[in-house]
Length: 172
Image (cartoon, rainbow, N blue to C red; front, side, top):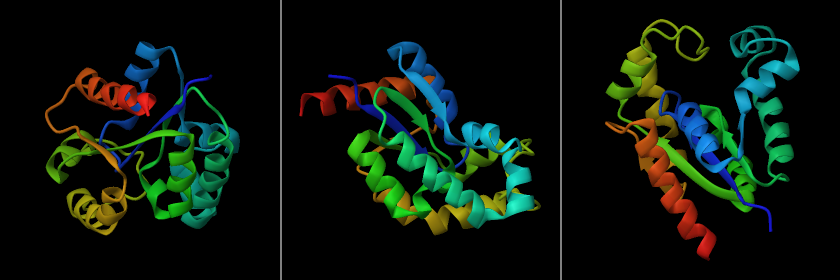
């Protein structure tokens, strides 16, 4: 039987992509970064997609990719932070493998993203926008069964916790 997917969900700056790289290296599974794949397929960066097509168009592209990836097995999938805005995305991913929500404090997220200029939803007052978006999405992230707090953890330590969860899920 082919391995189940490991899907990393969480707010931007919580470590989904960097942890995904560690997991891919340690498991031999392929890493799919959804934002990178969408940008590649569209021939535009995520900020360019948001500027030219708008967030609703991006969310439609994201939804289509979720449907495609949930049919696959043996992937590490790093999602965009807004994947939780459509509950069907999480439902589809939960059927295809272990879905883990990475979270961190607003302070940690701000430190990680302070100099990042590639986040279309964070322009101007980054700290205020992080706090507002986190508050808005908190119940959506909290609904995910498996969570890992990445505050103070290295990427390797985060991966260790996810692999422990994965081993437990594989026994069911």
